[in-house]
Length: 326
Image (tube, rainbow, N blue to C red; front, top):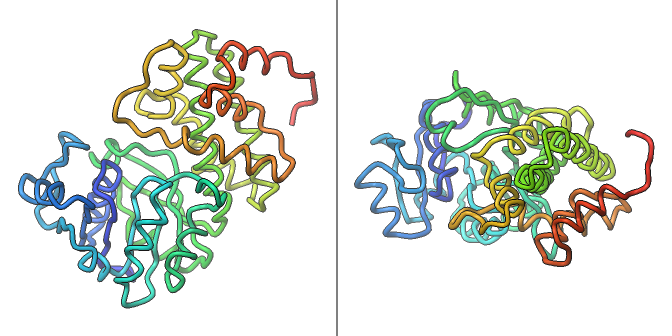
């Protein structure tokens, strides 16, 4: 029997709702917390979430606005955007009566501090056990029970294994790992690279350019990961290469959709959060601190900030000095 019988999900957006469904499907007792009281009441009464249309929420999933109620769970999944993680965990920490695993389910790097998600959890809730969930997945696929594999990493291998046992089901397969940094870098960097590939598709640069950006982007991701102590096998796994391939090729990817709109000269999709937009400037600052070159990511950050046009950024990539494959 899994060590964790109750699961709280903090954040009732599409991803949080999908994860609540995953946990219930795995046989756990689930509480879904929404920041907005009216949003919580609506979900509780209708058993559907307008942010994840067409997905029925099980009647025995508790939906609440009371953080103290969610904090009683054996494990907590935080499904807020990366830049809101610290605030969410700060609020949660004051209600925790015991040491529990807190699993970050966002992919990013905090502005200003350059902290990764598990580092933020450790600072905001010192008594908790930080973990990270990442990998190739879309909320709609996960909620509908389509086959999905992800990575869940914690410093302690036994803890990571127990968390996987608590969430796994025939259609949702988490693999456990201890390489927290590799999982976090893969998840954060791939969002930025997906924007680059979207731009190339929007500009109709062809399938060859799309493949080149994906592979060169992965080389960048790997360079930074190694510099920060990540293991190569993690970067080449689900939370690195697997996630990169998915987000660089699917219209469901918000980061790819943002790049696609930019490449076409259109307005980005309204109301859709693309984490890569916030991660890009932080990622290149972090890379610079390690003396790591990330030209594709730098081009994305330059385009997003308005420092460069798309054509100038593409030209800059194409005129870089020739060098050996790595």
